[in-house]
Image (spheres, rainbow, N blue to C red):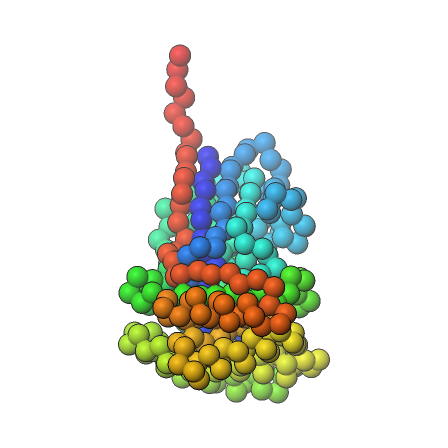
Amino acid sequence: MHALAQAQPNIALVKYWGKRNSTLNLPAVGSLSVTLESLWTRTRVELDPALRTDELTLDGRAARQREIDRVSALLERLRRLAGSAVHARVESANNFPTAAGLASSASGFAALAVAGSGAYGLALPPAELSRIARESSGSAARSIFGGFVEMEAGSADDGHDALARPLLDASAWPLAVLIAITSTREKEVGSTDGMTHTAQTSPYYQAWVAGSPVELQAARSAVLARDFDALAVVSERSCLRMHALASSADPGLIYWNGATVEALHTVRALRRGGTPCFFTVDAGPQVKVVCLPSATGRVAATLREVPGVVEVMQSTLGQGARLIAAEHAPARVSA
Ligand code: DP6
């Protein structure tokens, strides 16, 4: 029994930063994202009764133990649902560099949830796949869906109301996303550790959590009204507040380099000049720029001129995670 699934990364416009329950991986704040089209993770899960543990390769290399443990934890939850004890061989590949700062964990765990549930013969609805992906990585819950996606923080202890749901189809408001790569070095502090450290040490953390529902509401309204300028304002505000928060931890987290800052100024100058674009930055130095399709060429060319920008990648908005192929216990064909 095997299954192959594809999922795309998403870019948060209203940021998730902080957990209300680390064990269940429940977010402390809601978030809103766009799922990309041209970048993907493809993951194949093959069940093999001869295996004594799960096996994992990432982009063709044997995975580190820490990576295997995270994948096994998700598979274990699926095994419990399926009543199976069979281990799996997992092969996962991205068509984008991990150093692109594209939260490969989002597309990775979304693809794993879909391929894994296919391989174990579970027909799970998207909301359930999203919950399973969320338990491994908060942002992965959003990559189950396409287009514009909202993730509720919820308040229930068991997390049943911490759900991602689709807000608007990709085709309903076609936007473009550019990714300006400013460094290919692996980041020093990942999102999970970064947000835990921030929650424990920043004096501003409570204000961040308290302000989140208003930000989410503003972004949701902007998306439903297809109001680009309003979405630009709330997205840049959420990004800058997240980084202000992370840098107020003790010791402070600085995810940007000089080129990151130059690119932010460049995007602001473009918008002042009438080009419909805005920026956002995740837990790394790369700058993501959302723009109207008509502005894509101009924005990409301008970003390429920014000193320190080494590459600019481009995508439209795309669909959610899906099964590409699956095969279940084939009936024996007798000769
Ligand atoms: C800055 O989803 O990677 O990209 O739940 O600990 O796996 P874990 O964190 P993760 O955090 C993403 C943080 C962010 C903002 C966002 O995507 O909302």
